[in-house]
Length: 85
Image 1 (tube, one colour):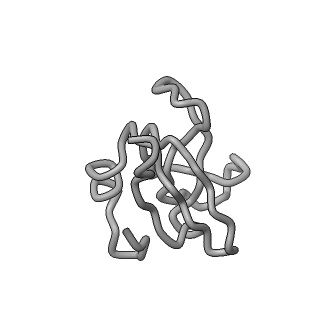
Image 2: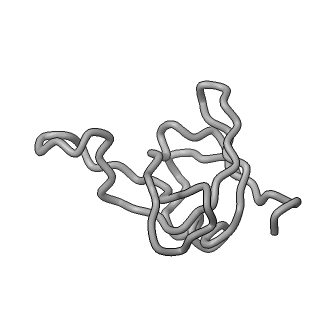
């Protein structure tokens, strides 16, 4: 799934919640991540005047109870990892 400004949090949640994925970043990196949830109040640095962004909440352990965030703005595409699902 290409991540564009038209993609909603629900689109990502419905397709990838609690799944191992391949996340292609706009900077060229390819990451294998477990998507736990999505967030519409993500801040890169948790500063008061920083804008709130849409983001995935992920980890690399497969746990459903915690995760870090990556803003949709930094992601090019997400797909299910066929080797782990």
